[in-house]
Length: 89
Image (cartoon, rainbow, N blue to C red; front, side, top):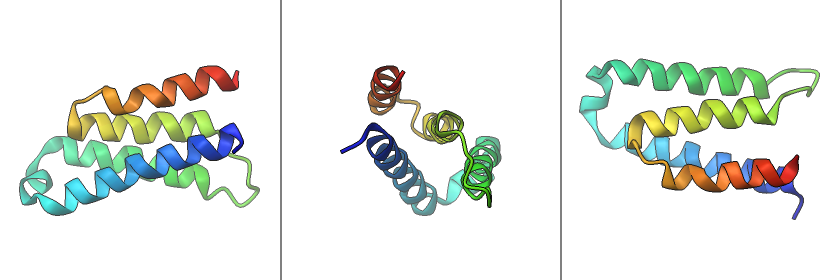
């Protein structure tokens, strides 16, 4: 599987984690970091929805990873992203 597809699958996995966590807890909606998470995710979606198809996978990874970290405060799941990114360079 090409590195780009692997990176996209990992981004998708992080986004699913975020979605499940945000929907399962009502107190996230009252938290200020909730707005920051939404901001990062909306920027990532905005980048991916570029009609020209010209998007930065690094930018999308960074935004989704930051949103994931703001919710879970855990770098362990983000480590594979860095390894894949380094091997893609």
